[in-house]
Image (cartoon, rainbow, N blue to C red):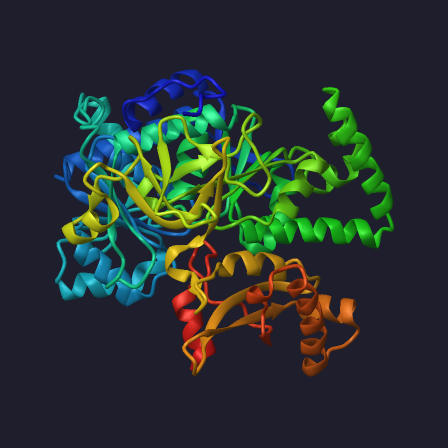
Length: 572
C-alpha cells in the first residue's frame, strides 16, 4: 500500500475540519473577488466563511430543517459553498444539483430526492416558480441566493445569514453544537445521465474526510495558494478537490468567469493551482507551444528543456527562471495542475512539467468521493494515473492476456450505495465491499495504474481484439488543428466493426496549418494525417473512415463526451 507523502491531520467529519482549520487559517483570504481597481481584490477570510456557515445553519435548524434534505443549484459562487456546508455540517443532507440540466430534469431530481428546501440563483427563478405553483414536491422553503430580503414567500439567503447571527447572539447553539453521524448519508449526489438513468450516490462524512486525507497526504497545497474554480461545484471532483480541500488548507479560491476568460483569470488572480479536465489543459498546452513557435523561440525552449532536465537530475531546478516569460504569461505564480475525469495526453503532462508547471493526473468516480489514485512528486509514471491512495486497496479482476481487466477499489472513501436502488448497488458494490469502477486498466509491477478505457465503450472485434476508443482519440487529438475527436465502431454486414472517427477541427488553426478553408480539402488533409497515425499502430486498430465538423461534441458539464448521444448522431 502507498504511504502518505505529506503530513495531514485526519478529520472525523467536515464540521471538525472547518473548526480546526479555521483556528489555524482564520485571518487568511478564503475567497477573492474582482473590484473596479485592477490588482485590488475584495477578500472573504476563512473566519468569515465559517461564521456565515454557522449563521446560515442556525437559521435553517430554526426553520425546522434539522435532518431534512436540502438541494443547492447555481453557477459556481460563494453562496453555493456556504449553503452546501451550512446544510451538511449540522443541519441535514445536502443534494447538489447539476446546473446545466434542463428544467424538467431539475424538477424530476427535486421530486426523487424529496428535498424540503432548495437554494438557487436567479437563473432558476422560472422553474422554481413552476414547482411552487404545482405543489407536487416536498419543498417548503425556496431560498434565493440573489434576493436581499424575503419576497412573495421566497426566502433570501443573505437575510437568513443575518437572522442566524441574531439567533446565535441570543444564545441559540443548536447548529454550533450539532453532532454529526460520520457513517450516515450526508451528501446525495446524482450521477450524470438522464434523470431516469441517473443514480443517487450516498456519501458520508467518513467517505469525504477519508478522501480529503488521501488528497492532502499526496498533493501539497498551503495557505499561500490560490485555486481557480472552473468545473461545476456540484461535481465531486471540483467539490472535494477544488472547494473542500482548499478550505481545509487555508488556501484561497477565485471563480472563473467562463471558458473564454480562463487565461485572463489565471493572470488577474495570480492563480497557483488549478484542478480541471484534460481537454482544458491539453488546449492550454497547445496554445503555449503555438505562441513559442510563433515567436521563433521553439528551438531555444527545446535547448532550455534539455539543460534544465539535466540539472534536475543533480537536484538543481532552474525551470521557472529559464522559462520566466512563459510563466509570466501564465500569471507568474502558476505551479500546479491536477487533471482528472478523462485520460490526459502524456505529451501535455510531460510538456508542462518540463516548463516548470507541475502536472499530476488523477482518477476517480463520484462513488469513491471521488479520487482513487493520483500522481505526486514521489509516485509518478508518465501515462499512468499514479498509485492508489494510501487508504485504498485496488486490484484488476478478469484480466486478459495483456493484464487488462476491470479496476476495483475498496476503502473508507467508497460510497454507502445508491439511494433507493438496491439492485444497482449490488451490481457496483460486491459483498466484500469492492467498488466495480467499470473502467478497464492494468497495474504494472510497481503498482502504477494505467487506464485503458470504459468497459462499456470497448469495441470488441470478431477476432477477439479489443479497441479502446479513448486511446485512439488521444493520438488523433495531437494532430495540429484538431480540437477533439470521437472514435466508434460502425457495424458491418459480416458482424464485425469498421473503426471510424468523427473529428472536430478548429477553422482558424486548420487554415493556418493546411492553407485551405474548403471542407473537402480540410477532410483530405486530416485523412492524410490520420493515415500517419495508423502507421504507428497494429493494423486491427486502423481508423478506416473519417467525418469532420466544426461543431463541438456533445458533452457533460465536466466536458466528458456523451458517447451514447454521439453514437446516435453518427450512426443515424
